[in-house]
Image 1 (cartoon, rainbow, N blue to C red):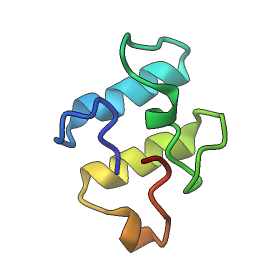
Image 2 (cartoon, rainbow, N blue to C red; image 1 turned 90 degrees about the vertical axis):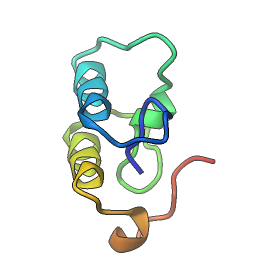
Image 3 (cartoon, rainbow, N blue to C red; image 1 turned 30 degrees about the vertical axis):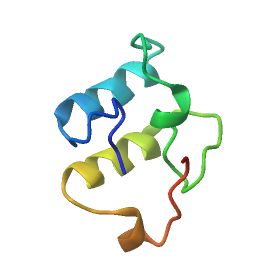
Image 4 (cartoon, helix red, strand yellow; image 1 turned 180 degrees about the vertical axis):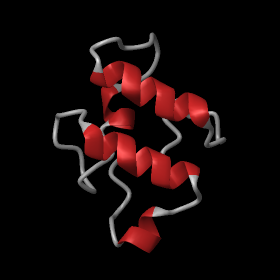
Length: 73
């Protein structure tokens, strides 16, 4: 959960990418679906809950710990 740039490492860059997308600045090669991670399934909106979920992932929390299914394959 939270690995927005799909490099198998959860780091601050993932949080930064979601914050930038929230402001309307999408990085090339980063999918909207990868950033739309809350509430548990994509809802076609990037908002503060997506940022919060990514911060929790950065802190080590998993989808299993939150009771959410993984939102994308």
